[in-house]
Length: 430
Image (tube, rainbow, N blue to C red; front, side, top):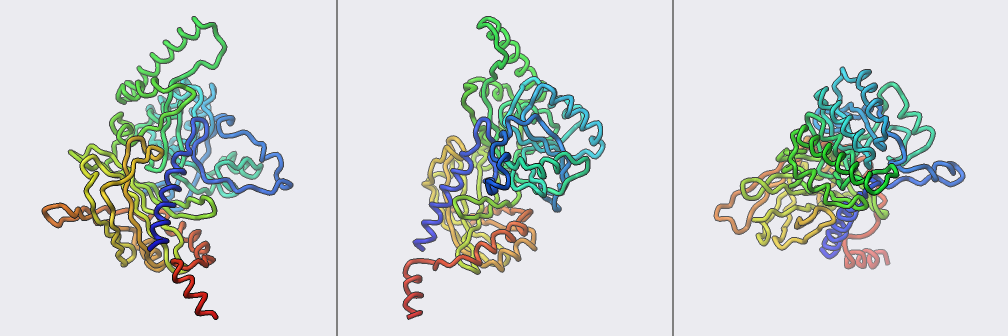
């Protein structure tokens, strides 16, 4: 039990650290596998994503790789440079007939270029979202090797993995607004701030230029059917900083109003530990107006069992109300107790309070869940007058692939469940 509690604390730190990592000019991504210096000395000094002009390529993954029914997509990554819209238009002219969704991974760039891209998406009724693409032959989203670059230049769809834990920041958000349907995975980030003029001007010219571009942005936000508060929120944030929109803002501003949305299951390695996780967002609380982030995560416990951590965002009427959550995973049921006290975690989502609980299940049950296509969470409010449960059903897209990565890590796991059992094991060997 002591080890389980410590793992919950460590898991929370990991979750919050991972999601705090999205910076103004550096979206979140899986840690890069560092090659040996003598193998790729130049790639280690390669420019970051915001130095790469916007590029597009076709990608193809496993069934449901990028969500329900989504296995092929258009990857859009890099900086919105002044010529970005013309390249997007040319690409869509060649491939637009397939009506594939577009997934952005970008730190921003030129706001006018982003608005032009957004209008192209709207004209073509494109669905767009936030997601990172990692082609086969690339080690991570930060791989600048010649092999990775060549894969992205292919005229044919490249075999790739889709990763939901990334960001669309600054000008990228305006491009995303143009999509007819907008998909913001719960594990991704949208970052906004005020615009800045990059071309040297006199103070008077800069003020006039800022007035003009801000007027254009406000009109564009309205044109795309979004709430004016999106522009107002962005304009209050200094350009040198960044504000990550929380799920309440994402819904209220009209960007993504889905009352239930899930990420695919994905692997998040950090500090020598591998965790398999899925984020999901729900509209709960009074009149279903509180959009809250939640997380289910699996990590190594023993060679044949995994620890289960459930992190739950609390709505305004749930704070202070303890409840239980029963997770049904591959025929096994683990009951987790969550306090209503929670803990405010602004690094995950500004102003949000989270509670957590944990347990364990066998790898066999986890594999059965992946094959059964659903994980069920039944929640019970201990103070409710009626013993009714609220049921959440989560998809298992990406779970089977994640198990393939997690299982070998756990097979090499040698620690015992707690100190007493470890001591007993040592005594038994004497």
